[in-house]
Image (cartoon, rainbow over all chains, first blue to last red; front, side):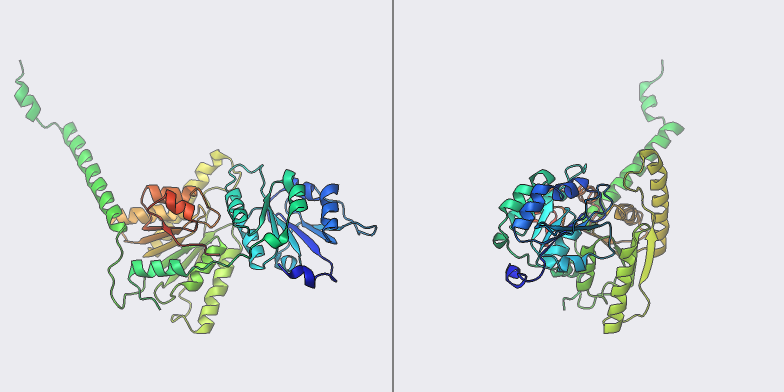
Length: 178
Length: 230
């Protein structure tokens, strides 16, 4: 991802999103001193956290004395703009969030919520991580993932195509293909 | 002493009833097996097939992607259903239909219909009240299906679609309406099928089940692997 070269002058933002869920353990993990210092060391200047329905509110910071600027909010009608202006996205494992981010070709760390009962969402994050489209972590391993991540190792995700389904439907129902 | 031969041949009213019930159940079973067998077979092809009325169960972005590549004039008139608590999906579908009208790719103006359906259960709802709300949802689904009687049903999860698919299947058995039920499993399902998909697969209620990851195709041989939609 060659975005780093273009962004040297502008503020590099890390955008954290939990969607409409409550995912306090992620917000807490991101808000720890060690993760914030690691992000700062990697050249990020601004940490923007969308907290959703969570009850843990991170302390805001203006980031004056050589540290990360921290901001947060609960919801937004559309996070597309925040995703677009981010240099790194840390997201919950919702498929909507994941694919919206991958479509914008942004580096992505997906954090799986282990408190969820039926955690099938982790299947998607793990599969995409195996295919090197994103990094997958748990709140406890977030620091290690940030420290070890090599954005250059990520492979861009090619958008999918619904045409094969349409073809199968047409052939099953006897409709001609265009 | 009673002649045991006569005893075997005598037909009492209660045994008549029993025989009728057994006969009836057998007929239903044969009918169900026949429906399941026919469901796996494609519709007969011809160069200009009539369009089929289509029910689209909304709830995900993947369904919008699928709608974009559908031949609008084959799948028409279109009926969109979303859960009552889902605010965005019907809006998105309306925007899509309007854009097709403007492009001129759609022949009939205003033929698309948009409806909401009650959900069986909200996340975290107590199981006791869930029984009541599920019954209401089933009744509502039945009402909508009687009104629409679609020829094609397209769904992608979520659970909203199960009452509709079940009723469609019953309509097939009773000869009320033959329909084609297509279920596209969510892209988030990589190694295990969702409960909705599992039901439709095991009970053979869907004509075709589509999966987006190869692992599911290896596990469920009758499913069709279509790659990722998003």
